[in-house]
Image (cartoon, rainbow, N blue to C red):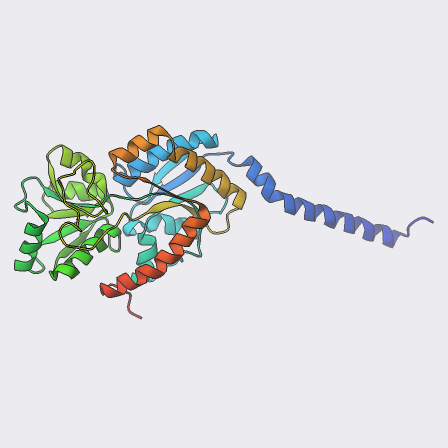
Length: 330
């Protein structure tokens, strides 16, 4: 018996609905298989030529070869390293074509001021990459021969002795705030957009000292700057005569780990493609050579491990911000 027109119509609609559902279910897989089909933008939230920029340009070049598409570094400095990733979280599509470095300031500045983004909920955590070697430098002709000289000068002239950092709430800033809290001295903090402009300000005599990652390495090696202290667990291989903060009696150790993130809602398969390419790049001898120049080590964390670390650090650093009196007022 032939189907009535109404039943035929219903059957056609049912078949069409099944086909649509199948297409939706496979769209994520198809996207991942086609990814990447164009260049990927990697936001570095610091100025060009600084230590982070040097690291990511080397890493991006190698990762791009594994991905089959170029990874293009785009510098977006400002906000202590939060402007670039923050703008990405608010504006970029979660399609894997815009990713960013995620500095530790992203987990601290929201405790210090209101932000339009949430450091955990608005990001997809792809891979943990490395951490910095922090140091405190002065010009070679500075009267401060040791870190204790600098602290004693601050003790004698409260608020008159200054230092620069890569921005309010960044690790280089908070490290010295911790030191001044322990030493009970008052220092004048001068924030910069990043390493490159801070180094030029120090060389030009516009700031007395600088706290930063190893963007100062070439100036120290060239005899233009003096490295007074580093903040790792051990003395560096490159500058073994320079004491750590622990050597000087300050129980302060930091390497400020960072990694790669994208906007929230990324396809897990696309995240895996990025993760795998950058993990291979991390192990490449050319990348390891750049890390050695920066006196840094690999800090590999899977996406899940990196997200867990970020959640725990966000909670832990709230106590640090409050102890230093830098927390946002309710």
